[in-house]
Length: 77
Image 1 (tube, one colour):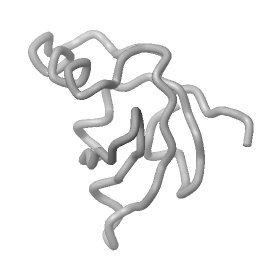
Image 2 (cartoon, helix red, strand yellow):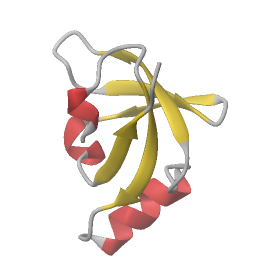
Image 3 (cartoon, rainbow, N blue to C red):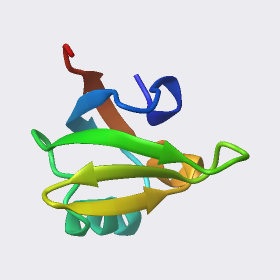
């Protein structure tokens, strides 16, 4: 599942990162998107990009292509 599949108010958990650009994977990890981290989708920009998520007590905005390497799992409401 990807962030694009989620709607406002959905909660999810990061289960991993896809293989790829090692430097960018490190950046995502540094932003707190480590496996096991739970987050909620708080809002989308009017055109659908970027998306704002709330995790670890702060809000983080990511463009859809930036969030593409995230492997996530939707949590029950």
